[in-house]
Length: 169
Image 1: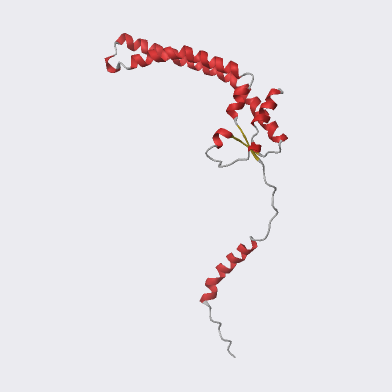
Image 2: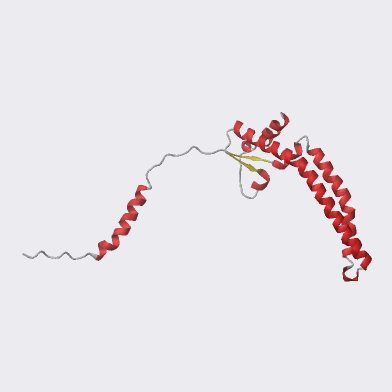
């Protein structure tokens, strides 16, 4: 007795991958454990930095740097405006002025950084403390969020809480 050879069904072989994918897709529709929503808040960092007690020293140092560097910059621009008609003596003076302004700017940058770094560290700590106190998972800078966030509940603004935390230090 001869057993008939089963015919291979082309339609079934093409449908098998679709059935497998469909089975996995249905499995992904089952409910999963959901995490609690994370609270997001905003801080106006520029406002907090201005409110910091040591900010006045930074502003004074920046003003001193501007007052000293602006006249040098004006002289440099005047000499550069001469273009190719500049005299050799003026070229030397221009070179000296550029060297001087670069050295002074570097010195002022170092002084300003030395004053700003501790302030930044304190602000970061105050933001962290205010976020933890208010149960916030993510804090965004209000200035950089302006283009990203269309609406934010005013109660999510931690700026005052951060200022309060800074005042306690």
